[in-house]
Amino acid sequence: MVSFHRPVVITGNWKMYKTIQEAQSFVSQLIPVVEEDDVGVWLAVPFTAIYSLAQEVQKTPLMIGAQNMNDASEGAFTGEIAGKMLKEAGASFVLLGHSERRRLYHEDNAFINRKVKRALEAGLRPVLCVGETLQEYEAGETQHVIQTQLTECLKELAAEQLKSLVIAYEPVWAIGHGQSATPEIAQEVQSFCRQVMAEQFSSELAEQLVIQYGGSVNTSNAKELLSQPDIDGLLIGGASLSLESFIQIVNDSKSKIQSQG
Image 1 (cartoon, rainbow, N blue to C red):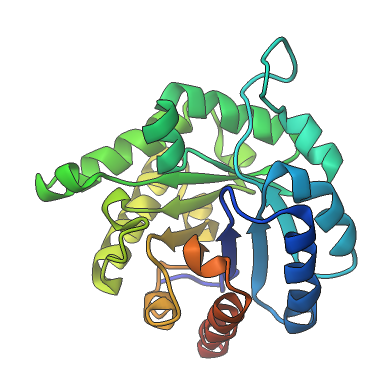
Image 2: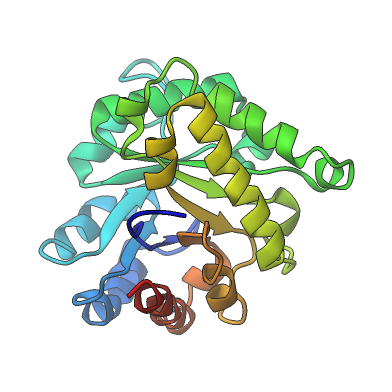
């Protein structure tokens, strides 16, 4: 039982969608919806749109972030981008360890660990994505996979360094397949994430951490997912590309704030 209310954070992950013009149009219509809300609304946008959107959302609660970064501060890494570059462009946070990065680009926990350290060094809030595959889920290995990812991705970091960390639990078997984990399954795993963080770092940090759920989140399941005590927000893919759907999910998330009194 928490002694205070954790923030509710709704994050849209646009992946490789939206030109600068499309992104600006989306955000200009979103700003009036969120400017007075208590819900945190974040957008992980393509690199090309970070600077212009960061300028546009100044003096609003909206936060603009990146979907990835390199683990080096600079160097001869053609096509890569550094955390300090993202920060200078106006990014406030960065997604790290997304399952698509792990699966398509073979990023392992050690690489992600270096990225988390570099993000913190650059002044970016790391959003660490963790989650099991269908094969691991069916084999009953969910907790082992999650514990390994959290332990190895946060290796050699102290609780004091991780106050800005956000964890996003995304079961790989639910991402992009229209099959979301049930609220009960998501709650069980996210409660376990908090337990691991308490054991690995401190109960105080674990209690304060924002832990999001991601994986085929849409307008039909967002409110029910957020009703769970350890689901503090949502990481949304496809449904965040539609202004109408994203606004509905943001509005539905207000019920969690209201229920906290």
